[in-house]
Image (tube, rainbow over all chains, first blue to last red; front, side):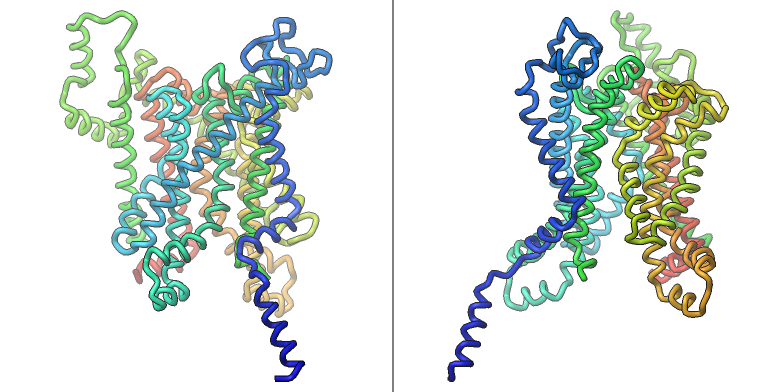
Amino acid sequence: MNEVTRDAFSQALDRRTVRGRSLYVDAWHRLLKNKAAVAALIVLVVMIVLVAVGPMLSDWDHEIPDWDNYSTPPSLETGHLFGTDALGRDLFVRTMIGGRISLLVGLVATLVSLLIGVSYGAVAGFFGGRVDNIMMRFVDGIYAMPFMFFVIVLMVVFGRNIFLIFVAIGAVNWLDMARIVRGQTLSLKNKDFVEAARACGGTELQIIRRHIIPNLLGVVIVYVTLTIPQVILVESFLSFLGLGVQEPLTSWGALVNEGAQELETAPWSLLFPAGFLAATLFAFNFLGDGLRDALDPKDRL
Amino acid sequence: MLSYSLKRLASAIPTLFLLITFAFFMIRIAPGGPFDSERALPPEIEANLAAKYHLDEPLVVQYGRYLWNIARLDFGPSFHYLDWSVNDLILQGAPVSFTLGLLALLLALAIGIPIGAWAAFRQNRAADYSVMSLAMVGISIPNFVMAPLLILLFAITLGWLPAGGWEFSPSRMVLPVVTLALPMIAYIARITRGSMIEVLHASFIRTARAKGMPERSILFNHALKPALLPVISYLGPAAAAILTGSVVVERIFTIPGIGSYFVQGALNRDYTLVMGVVILYGMLIILFNFLVDLIYAWLDPRIRYDEQEA
């Protein structure tokens, strides 16, 4: 072996030690190139930090009124950055507390729907055949129902309890997730690399862990980012109708409702919570779109 | 076509059945009866009331009666408004709600489709990006936020339009209809753009271009019809969106439609009214999805053939 080939050989060896980039590292780099998605990510991080620490920075409490200031506009002098509501409560703190509830509901209810949807869809897709047929017919059946109204009815019948909101919204939102996961599992199951893994002597459990779950992850991540704003929206909708979170707790939907009633005299009490709600929904939707573009191998050129 | 319709109609029946069953048992397990009040009634009167409304019969008989009544479109008496049946309330609200929903749907189609097609035509140019960003705003701002903002701007600040109330006049209808239509315009524009881009890349469009057809006639004669198929399939969900949206819009603009009765019923625990509206909405959504499927199958014969082969 002469010097030249030895060099080439060692170079090739070196190259092999370079770590391969996984799908997710790749997707992450693509996501970082998408300006709208990065901006959305920043907005969301700022929003979460603000909502988490905001109430501690203010001198006011979300329940206790400032007896000197009823329905006062935002000002630095009084210390009420977003003004006060008709009962003299500081709107900055209330918006932050409302944000905590809205984001919390968004996350928890999405988790509930994730849990139900992924297991249901994965089971239907993996077993296929008759099981799949029956399970998906059931999903189709309840898909056609006016579910928003069932959530409302649930709230009416069982009282307005925050844990019920989590469960009710989660229980309603799993249908899409189940359908997507089922379709994905069904197509993954018949892929050549699964066949290859099976031929190499991989057990079912190994195949599920090594091939099915990682390949489902992308779709699930995208869908979770798109479900969170939907869930926040449902909660706000309920609270707006007076059926969601109850006083003294609040959420963005409840604040928008209060603000809408004082529209003429105190427009700030609508504008701040509405702005935070819209910005959050906007950011989640943009991030979800960006993630879909980043993770979808179809558009990779 | 007929056998396809019948098959589709038959598949809607279990859904409807599930819906009604769910509604019935939901009312039954709800805590508190319709005649509970602060002061306990004498047991004899309670028994009479129960007999009058058949609450003393076994659950199975009651369920059968409920199914039969729903089949005859009789939703029973309201538990809150004395002397009113749920049917009366629904019939009173229906014309208002339907006018509102229909106008919003037409407006959304009339604006959403051209905007989406235009964005697709200018794909990846400034016009496309700005239209799609605006559409994202439209989707992200919920209508219970949009409605007060519109009122603030057009009714309070500018004073051009009334802030609420209802009569069949354009000035009162503009704001509610626009509020209801905005998110739908956004969705329709996005869907139209997506499918239009796909169609414009199809080979039959390339052939048309190669033949030297003018762009205008390519767009209108060849691309538009296939590009509209996904929009039509969106009309099913759109119907559901209108129904949900109307609950909010009717409440904000104080419009006496079915949506406001629904919210009022929910707050008053008027179970029969709430369930009546839910079942009615369910029927409407099922009916709408059915019609959409029929139109779809009529426009796209491949679907019918698939059905026959299977």
